[in-house]
Length: 323
Image (tube, rainbow, N blue to C red; front, top):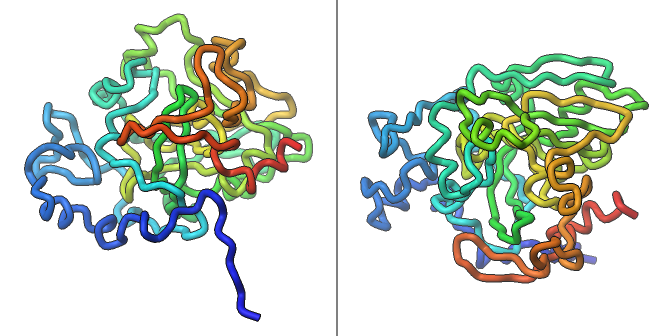
């Protein structure tokens, strides 16, 4: 009897996929479209002017080790919608450390230094250590995955992330049986991140948490790249979390510390606005935000509104975690 594969409900039909030759050879594609040298995609798609500067003088000097990107795409993780245009995704970012205005974040990250960068792994583990981010890039199994990304503000995009399963790091540090949760913290650099000064009422630095079962789920990624190249600063360079079945604020950016603990950790937005944001933050169209509906979501590059799926369409992977 022949093997019949039943596609998942969120998988993208082949007719909607970006052709591989176009995706992997953007320079050729952009020239064919007449965009070369026009500045329309400056800072996007990995295209770098010869002088290493973006329009306005922003440095585009490469920081990651050579030969890391692009990583091989894992065909097990695909989409039911076309990828978001990178030029749009690169200039529409929630990163309050720099600004609460999404369209301004990419303009305010110039002074943010992502090298050298270390990530401390500590707490209830047998092998605590401090990782240099470039060491992680060389030793971990990097791959590209196509994921939905859903913001709590009811907008969404579809992104090709490059990273490695959080489980790979967890297996290396060997959590003790008493470790039930993972607490993550980002940077505190008010001299480089103007939002940490201007929005002084927030409890900086940003912090988030997962259960250890959530952290070890196969979907959970530690991400270092996007669109086939190194992660830009506005996306959370040099390493961030992606948990695609949760609202975007759970996917903490620019991580400096990962701690394993027996007690559920506090989280930034739950502490700041507890009646609006809880610890779990799973995408659910049936549970409205106090100020807006979650029943639909707006695709940021087209403006089209589409129905929201529970767990952002990843119920087959994660629903058992909440039974």
